[in-house]
Length: 399
Image 1 (tube, rainbow, N blue to C red):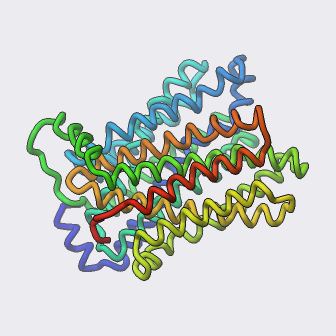
Image 2: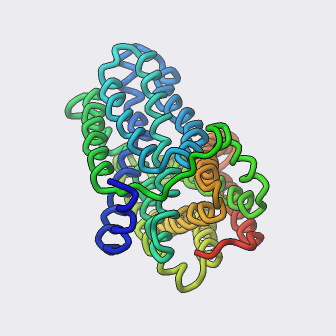
Image 3: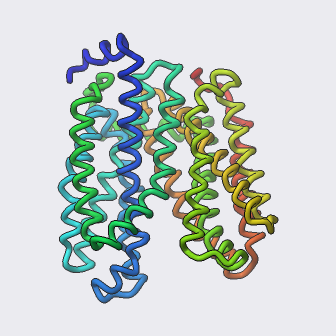
C-alpha cells in the first residue's frame, strides 16, 4: 500500500479503523505471548536437555532481557524508517526464527534463538502505538490504544494456557512450530490490510534518531508518566506472583484452580476498550487517577481478604484499574513525545517491562521473610506512588 492509502483510510474511516484495531490487537496478543510461552515449559526443558531448573529458566530470561533492550532500539528506528516497515520486519524475522527454536537440540541454541525472538518482538509495541497516535483521529486513539494494551495483558494468560495445552498433547517443539505459522499469517495480514502511516523524516543520521532520548528526559510530564508506568506492571506481575502462592497455601487451590482465578482476571481487562468513551466525557487526567485508585484499593483489600469469592472480585477490580491506566498512560506518553514519539513510547515500554521484571523479585523477597499481607500492601504502596505522581502532570497536549 502507498502512503496515499492513509487518506483513503480516513475517507472510509469506520470499517478501516476497526480492521486495523483488530489486527493490532491480534498482533499484540500473539507477539507478546512469546514472553510467557516458556513459563510452563521450564520443567519440560529440564528433562529434555538434562539441565537444572535455573539453567532452563534462561529460556525465558534471555527473551525478556533482549525484549527490554529491543524497545530502546526499534522505537527510534521506527521514527526514521516507518512504523509499518518496522512491524513487518519484526514479524518476518519472528516467522523465520520461531520454528527454529522448536528444532533446537541443546539448551544453548534454544536460549540464543529465544534472545533473537525477544529482540525482534520489541518491534511491535512502540511502532504500533506511534502509528495509532499519528494516523487515527483523536476520538479513536484512546480506544485503539486500549485494545492494544489489553492484548499485552491478555497475552500473559493466553500464552501460558496455550503453551501448556500444545506441549501436553504434541510436545514442546510444536509450541514454536505453530507460533511460527501464526506469525506468517500475521505478517500477511499487516502487509495487506494496514496502510503505510505518516511519512517519516529521513534527514540526519540514524544516530540522530537515538538522540531523541535526551529530549524525553527533559520533559517533567514524561518523567512523571514514567513513574506511573513502572509502578503498573510492577504491581500487576508482583500481585499475580504473590497470588499464586497465597491461593495455594491459604485456600488449598491446586494449579488448575489457580489458573481459573487468573483467567477470571480477564474480566477486569474488558473495561479497558471503553476507556476512550470515559476519557471523552471526564478527561484523560481524571481517568488515569480513577484507574490507579481502583487498582490501589483492589490490591490493598486483597491482602486482608479471607473469603475466596471476595478475593477474586477484588482481583478483577485491581486488573480493571491497571488495564484502564495502562492504555491511557501509553496514549498520554505518545502525545507528550511529539517529534520524539517513537523514543518516548520505547522508553515507556522499556520501563513497563522493567517494572514487570522487578515486581516478582520484590514480591518473592518479601514473602521469604514476611507475610502475604505485607506483600500485597507493599505492592499497593508502590502503586500509590504512581497515583500521587498523576496529580503533578500538567500542560499535557489535548487528546
